[in-house]
Length: 151
Image (cartoon, rainbow, N blue to C red; front, side, top):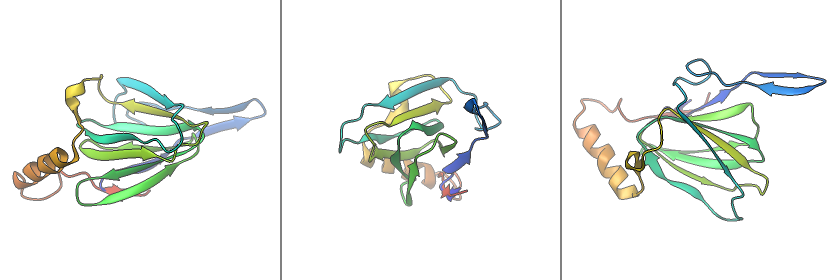
């Protein structure tokens, strides 16, 4: 885990002569109930995704290929490479994320703890920094700001 609350999660892989099975269970492998899943694929070379913060929790893993995800809590930043289906990235609420360096065959699965609502996204980085600043000013410490540690 990094000191922003982002962490890689190693999922159990059951492999034998028939292939591999990797399961993800709510509140066991990831600390939330899964309400929504979406896939990102066919990303053109040099294109980036994300570029926003989300007010809920997400878990991302590459089913095929690889990509990189840079996460930030407004004061610290860390880049993770996702390149195998048994390792995912937990992205806590109020974390800015940018996704890039997608391989042509990349299929990224993202699991969320809520249904889609465009109002839950902060697409302007300055607005994100302002919101983090306001939340920090209302707190006696910065524990409300997610932190990133690698497991």
